[in-house]
Image 1 (cartoon, rainbow, N blue to C red):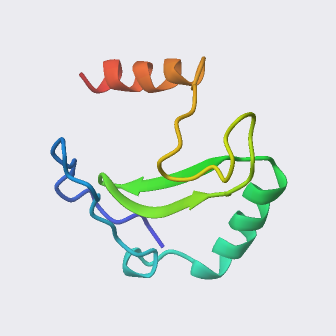
Image 2: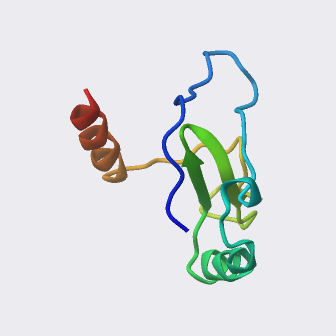
Length: 96
């Protein structure tokens, strides 16, 4: 199906402990493909993966593996992005 039009973009205020979320099924996404995505993430040494739609979390995964000095990498783990931050910076400059 065609992507749904953008609704009001959401971004939580500082100090809000949880972000709003939306389910893949409510967006009309193919949920039967999600296990294949999970398998791909687990076999490619991914640490974390998130999909946002209009600022709301649709898919959020943490592989829970041990990486470097972090045991059971998860939602509250810190991780150094290195050059990945350049992509985020470029996107923010483009939006601005």
